[in-house]
Length: 553
RNA sequence: UGGGUUAUAGUGUAAUGGUAGCACUACAGAUUUUGAUUCUGUCCGUCUAGGUUCGAAUCCUAGUAACCCAACCA
Image 1 (cartoon, chains in turn green, blue):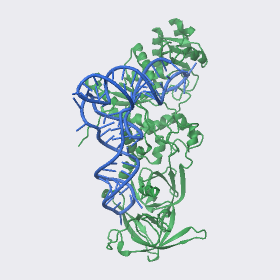
Image 2 (cartoon, rainbow, N blue to C red; image 1 turned 30 degrees about the vertical axis):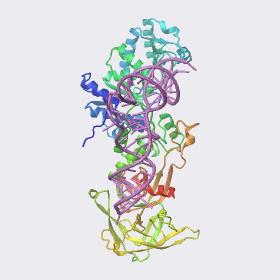
Image 3 (cartoon, helix red, strand yellow; image 1 turned 180 degrees about the vertical axis):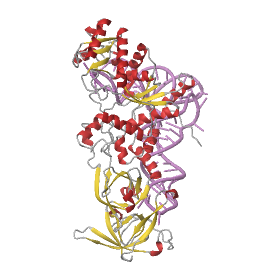
Image 4 (cartoon, chains in turn orange, green; image 1 turned 60 degrees about the horizontal axis):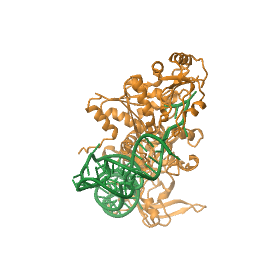
């Protein structure tokens, strides 16, 4: 019954660490910088880090890497916390790199005392020039040989605010000729007279990533510090600092970040989409952000399943968007309430049905009996989907056309007798006759039809705005395509239908419930919806074998 | 013309010297009061060239390709 699922390489490392007694328990962390909203790529990291904590009965911290005050804001902190919780994870501790500014400063002083760090007065340009290139070794700055006493003095003056931004930096004294650029006397501290979202104006020097991340891991006793591939070159420095400082030896492990077709994943690009108005905000339902996907109608379960299915490895990858859609539909199919709504309405009149009569029909709410049933009102005049009618039936057409029979879902089989057109030649009414003995639930006719279509009674329908979404980009990989990635934005990614009709049970729709509009897809109530104006987002369409059929014909 | 990392069906991921498997996609069929779901089946793969071995995706040698590294960003 229980298929043994093979371990990913990080799980193998952890199991080895646990069995050989290196650790009794593990502690991981999810370390976002609060400078933007979380996206599906972060979800992969969240599921990994928190998932490991759960699987191995360890713990996971949420730590904000807030060492660059000019980019970080409390708004982002709040959204990140909301997103992690919504995904279904609970952190052991909520921590901030800025909590450690005092300790970090002391560690830097310790490094100076050990003769392993120095204050450099060089300008950014000078430092870059002396750093060399990957193929040309770097050269020492004149300040490299400063005495420990002088370095201590200068560093404390940096902290005291004696110098302006950029005047001085603290650098590790490692190896200017290292083939690893990050070991060529990396910057550890820089001067920034900037207001920090948590520490306010208490500091004017801030640690760099390399002197904050590993040290924060070490301070917290993180056992497995998991990050993405681009940090591989930092690992040598990560290890060097921990060794020289003699602190808890956290270990860094790297995995490949998530890439997906038809979207972009970098914070820089996502920010551009927002600020330049290509989307309506970070939580625009077309965005790959957690907040956007949530608003679109994704469930946390579907995102977790997705992250589980894509796996963890060290090779570059490009995941098909269709896998995400599969995970989404898989979950929604189980949980969504079935309802009827007509997106592109066309009148259907049942000519032999009594005027003014209403029948309360029973329809299933979900895929199995547990979901129960509800009442839908049926009458002589209905809205049906315009695309469910053809003036002349095509090959393999199972829906309405003159002379054709279809079942109205949960109601009767009707035969199409004719139609009328308006003065512009557009079909405006379909005329049908119904077969009373075909009533859903006690059909005694023995007639079977190929097609079943959805409908709403005109007299009972409720108006709604419906927003349909398509992929945000027209090409698989806008990031690597030639020129500006924004050239490839799909201008049809949002289609607003202002005048859809939905069944009246949706008057009590909630934002937490997912719905399947029969045959039209999965929908959710948008946050902009109001009691007098329902607004639905289409989360994803249903799979559509018919449209494929049409393409083949 | 430095260093690092990675190469398994279209995509992703397993196989830890012993039958190349799983999922998505695509395709075909069955069921269906959603052209959905469900069910069944099909197609397609070890970067290349040598070598070691009874046996290689796995080990060795030499290539090739892709990605990352020269921010007072993380």
